[in-house]
Amino acid sequence: MRKALDIQPGTQTDAPQGLTLYGIKNCDTVRKARNWLEAHDVAYIFHDYKLAGVTRQKLEDWVAQVGWEKLLNKAGTTFRKLPDADRADLTEKKAVALMLAHPTLIKRPVLEMPQGLLVGFKPDVYAQALG
Image (cartoon, rainbow, N blue to C red; front, top):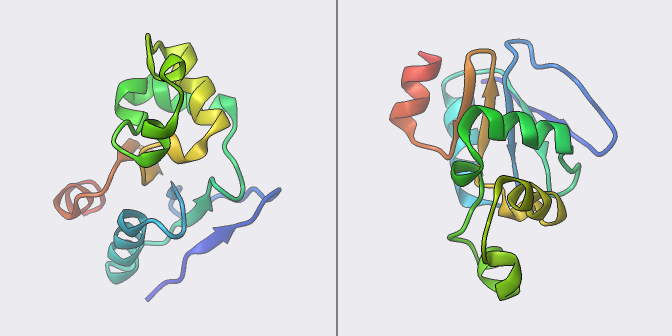
């Protein structure tokens, strides 16, 4: 079984197959995705964006690929605890700013692959994408 390369703040590395899993280490869904990848012997880099952060450019790239609506986690407690003014009249620009300020608002995990992004974790979708 392969072990993931964990990204610490201030480091940047490329995964052997170009796979980087973004998320939060203590998230159950991220844990399931990591377990799936390791059980299927898929090499990847893990980037904990709660610890290491995420850049505006990275978020904007993701939004361009999948849309801010898919990337913004409105179901979590972080979103529900935001002031009403922050939750109202959401736009792409406002959503990106909120996700930068509160990385836990980013739906997780985000699997970055050469062929695109997968947002969230579903074993069948991972199996289809990673064969």
